[in-house]
Length: 181
Image 1: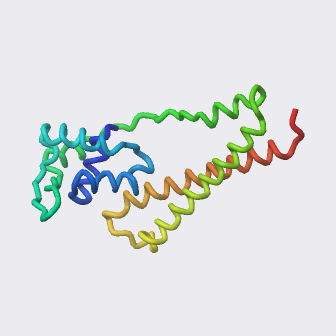
Image 2: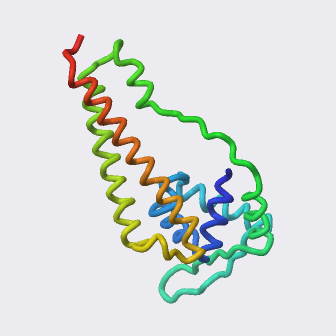
Image 3: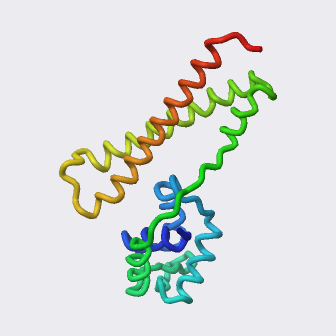
């Protein structure tokens, strides 16, 4: 997947300025696809040249003009085509896992501290996702068709964080339940 597809999804849901798109990435899409504000603006320019998005300049009183981007028919067609392509397996790249592999060769106390820190981060992210689920999808059995995809992505995030918490708990149980070497 390219950043272009993540932007197309966001614009398909709602038109917006580059700043608004960057904020949406920070609040939502950025939980599973990272992009800096600079990357988003650069890619928007290329997408506009390619005809996937269009922009309209909105004049503002006392502030700089802003560009509001919208997805085009060609952008919708590209997004639809993207959904027909098989997803490639996504390899796990984790410095945390490498540290655990180095347990015997490294600073056990530092690794334990890192496990506690990671557990706290996963617990925080899980709480955020669960709050979002309660707020935006209080009745999952009565979802609007437009909400099914975002809900399922949120569920994937919840399950992922639950799994990460369980793994951290298993690590802590194993490491704190035996004497250090």
